[in-house]
Length: 255
Image (cartoon, rainbow, N blue to C red; front, side, top):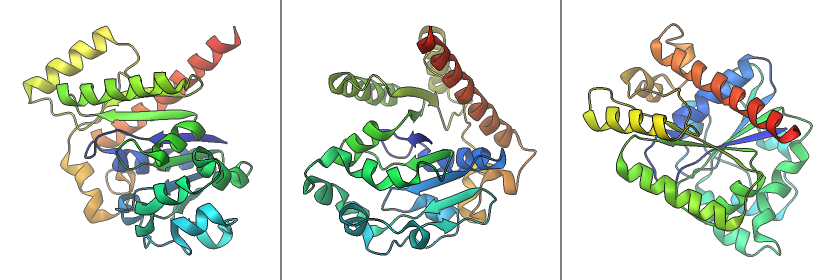
């Protein structure tokens, strides 16, 4: 089981749209996939037409042994399940803090699913919290979407400094630019300069697009209503590059 987390300190950077489309792509290749909507706002649950409600809420997930057969929801897409959001997730930090090991709560919840899924995607709320530290601890890959602006890069640098202090060496951090508007000079300049100087950033980018925004109306991944669009192709390129980056890193570790 591999865990991919879509995360940024900042909100409004396209984490949810990316999480939904990448999870869909994962499932479409035959990989047993699940997406957990950790954001109490419930964007992923909304896009996948599932009510943002979990029996027992955050307290039940953390303090009891989750009965996943009752909690997981089918999305209507082959190989893709959803653990929905719940408004009680806003209190997730409170319940985690009451545990003996606050930073191991999510690991305990997801551990029973290790043989059930190939890929799990976490759509994470913004901020640096105890929940966030749980995410860092259990994730194999931290996917960080950024809008190409100086403030977004500043927030990314803060994240890296935080991770270095926590010594999260096994965590693969993969940043990429999202919601890119090529007509904005600052977007063009930042994207070009960062790609030239920082190869850790993926070359694939996701554009600012009304087709992607239409997910809020269609309530489905881009591929279901605009399969041949440039935007769908961009998500495919992004997923392919993520997989390629992972393989490269794994091969280096073996040497």
